[in-house]
Image (cartoon, rainbow, N blue to C red; front, top):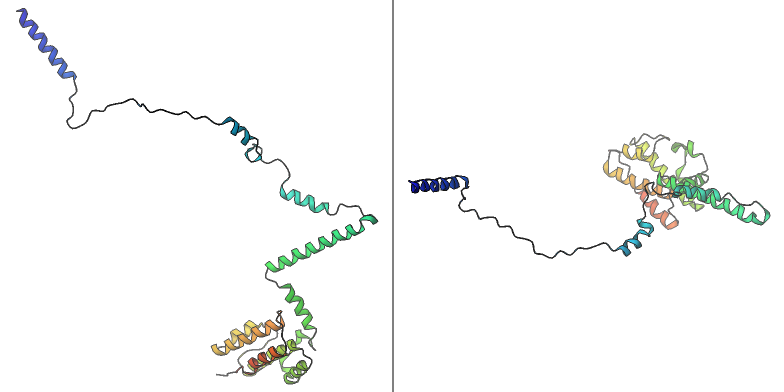
Length: 243
């Protein structure tokens, strides 16, 4: 009887062990954890190098930002210092020299502004000087009141080739107006006259004449007798087509 009890206890023990053990899934390898035996080299900051960098201006930062005068402030301080000098006889030359430099600087600044705005100051000045060579008022210039042949010959005899080119251009406007191809008006621009021409070939030819005229009259194009002869040929060959 005692043997049977031992046998029952053993069977119960084996059954409890089987129920508490999780089954091993087939095909999945068992995870093996190994200790890392690699040698780790601990690195430290170079205190001497850090000290050198911390003393350099480029690596010095402040929460309040840059403390000192800005470039704009230094510029105005320098500008107003130009007026701060002793107006005595010993510094009289320095007095006028400073004002001369300031005047030249202002003139250069104004010239630069006009240049950036697309205004050619030299051409404006030259246009004014050229208008003085015209024997009549340009603002009331009437193409129907000019004897072009006589005026062109007179300008050429005086070697005033610029005025001669202007007269040739006005003559071409007279020819186009007489042919009814443009509506002449003293307040119109040369571009308007070009756009009024309906014939493409004629418009291209007149555009070339307009360019030659503007180069000579308003630009800095140097013209002599030889160049004037070539320009005259262009104007004489200009064909005013009425159809």
